[in-house]
Amino acid sequence: MPNQDPLFVHAALILLGLIIAGGALASLRDWRAGMWFWLLAGVLQDPVRKILPGTPPILTLSFTPIYFAMFAGLLAKTDAFGSFRRKFPELVPIATLFCMTLVVSFAQTLSYGRPAYSVAVLGLFSYVGGVPAILLGFQYVRRSHLEVHRVLYVLMGITTVMLTGVFLEYMEVRLPVPALGTIVQREWLRWVEGHEMRMISGFYRTPEIMGWHAMTLVMLGLYFMVRRPSFTLLWWSLMGLGGYAVLLSCRRKMFLALLVYVAALIIISRGAVRRRLAVYAAITAAVIVPVLLLVTEHKYLLAAQTGLTTAGAKAAEKGFAGPMWLVNLVGPFGFGVGTKSQGTQHLDYMIQTPLVEGGFEKILVEVGVVGVTAACLLLIMLVIAAARCIRYTIVRTDDNTLLVGIAALLCANLATFVISFQTYGDPFIVSLLGFLFGVLLSVSRVPSQPSSDAGRDDVPMRRGRNRRRRTAEQPRRTRRSTPPVEARME
Image (cartoon, rainbow, N blue to C red; front, side, top):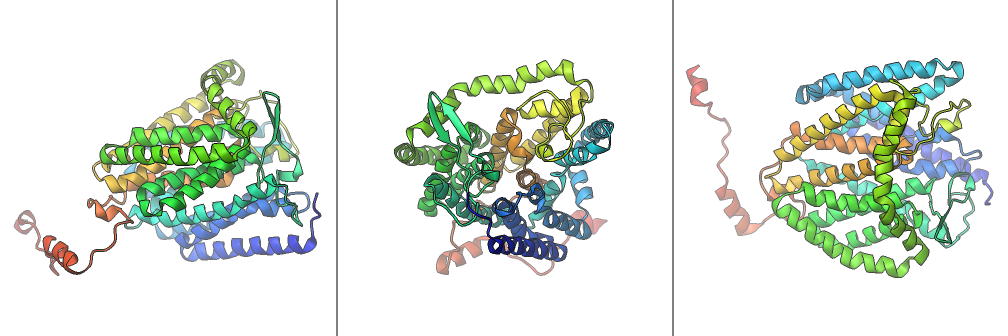
């Protein structure tokens, strides 16, 4: 195991501290400017944590000063809650009911005594910590939803750099600091049909987290290939890198999430967008899949194949059979928030609860039958609201591509959450998904552009004669608009 050189440790802490301080100050002045610092801190916290002595778990929350500074800047300049409530009033009573169940379950955790206070706070944050991200995404777009592309470009660039650690760990490169491998340098192994394989995590703290970021890179690469086909070779390269990392992570649910993403893309989209997505997905699979089959070891491919054969049984077990078995054990309000939350294993107090892995199972154990019923009702209302936003832009095909891509990404993550909740114990991942969901709902605040070319960022500006002809076809703008007849009569 590499030594933790004090020089590297101090340099990493100073760098992360500068990012956090700079991001928080920039967010208070202009909360949108904090986005870049938020992404940097959320991703770099993993390698910094691994090279510090003792790998302090608190660094998993190192992005939160920027996150809450952005939220404070948002509240100082906009009526975020009021705007959201006016656009989606039907969500208020269901959200209030769910919050009431959280309060009861929070009190349930506090009843275990003073050592359980930190468990209760961490558990409550896992449920409500994504709310600021939804409001940030809801207010982020000012004129066009294509503004979100800048955020996605930066995320893809940072993820690409971080995934280089996958190759370094796979080739057993030794760095002067323990930045590669799973946190605390424990080697994760998986056995499939007699084959033993290392679960690679690279610069990320676990294969779970690395697999999620690699999976997201593949999804965004497919989306941008549809949006900007002139850069197809770049998107193929990024998708190939992400797909290879997903296979080396040995997290089969990430591989299955990619299939859910493609299926959701085609199902949700309509008309020309659906045909274009289907064609690009087929071409991409025909190019990238043979390359991955050629460069990936057989045992890693075998692990992904077993995921396909057991996917149906796993989904039925975690989504139906498991919750039905838990109903008689958890009671109306469960064991309390935080009792199954990721991260509580680092605290001094552990509460004995049933062993579960699925996301709905976890919610059922923590908030009970009443809480999970309220959570399901809230989820249904959120899905209806998102579907209404997508239908609103269904005839505006170009802008709709972004919304379809975000909706498909969220569907894939929901399917993964049903199987396993561990990945979504990462606060940064939850906040990032909340931000994207807020962007999806922001269609109700910033209508999409009706022009087909207005929604595309790969259509160049027309010059010369074509530009003059297009200008002549548009209605003439006047300095002072004439009020309608009805207004003049009044």
